[in-house]
Image 1: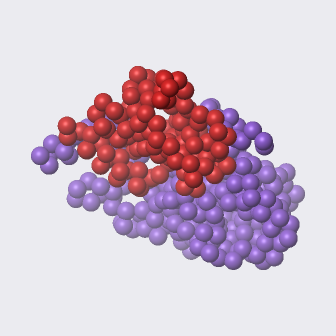
Image 2 (image 1 turned 60 degrees about the vertical axis):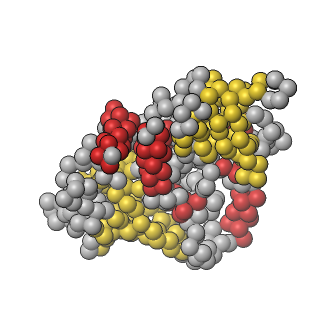
Image 3 (image 1 turned 120 degrees about the vertical axis):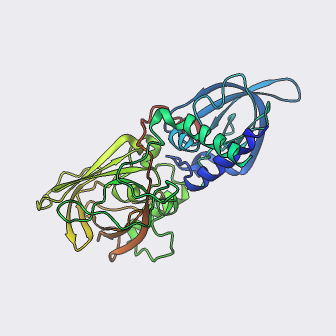
Length: 130
Length: 252
């Protein structure tokens, strides 16, 4: 399993040089004091500007499933960092680190995405930091 | 092992980028022996002997987009500007135009880290901004700025050469635009003076002076650099999926 390590390195290098950018104010939408970690199954990926969004079904301890929407950076920054629209697909199980929306709805900003099947880490190009 | 790793890297980058022309070598770029762009090579000249600013450039970070005064310089705000700035700060920049898919303007695009392609002809310099899929024209054909301009998102820009430095005067920017993401405001009398100097092949000095008596008691100046982005290409950027307002607190 060499490839995941390589991919991680490649992404780290590229992303370090060219962080993706939010078109909106991170602080107006998301709460940097409310980190979240979610594991679930991808239901949809929207490979679009101004932000890539993906949705995951997350099961809580009672078995109730909630569909969470997660924002990433823009697709162009992700493309230049080595992502494609096929890097994460519906049906993939992923673990996401990020921050919750201030609104309290099941929405967040992803800072990292790890594919459960391979442990491969897909940098999310979070829109935080401006 | 090392070769295998390098091959895997090349393959990954190539497979991700090839379809979008993201790794085609840019013609005319001086190269190091290993094939990488030599960004420390001398700045190129046009056939008429002017500095040639052509290329894809960006600010390497979001630092000055986030706040033009990021270096701690004093921003001499008038009470009018101070009140607007405070409101924008207190509301976490919720009303920033770009959040509604409106483009940035002159100064915040200067400070932006998304790519812009500079096209240079003898009487006109064009900046094609990848972000918001928009552009700006700087006329260098000797024309004067309009006397009573209709306020416009990018205003009206004319440039002239001061040695190797391009000095660009811009007026007529309407008040809806923010100077940066922090929300520094301006009035319609704003006069932006930009000074661009290509230091070498890979770096551009950018200096911005903001002269606006409604918002600032005296002119203030910010300086930073652009870096060349060789071997890439502009990509599509249409604000088609703006979910910003889905996420806002309900009590807005």
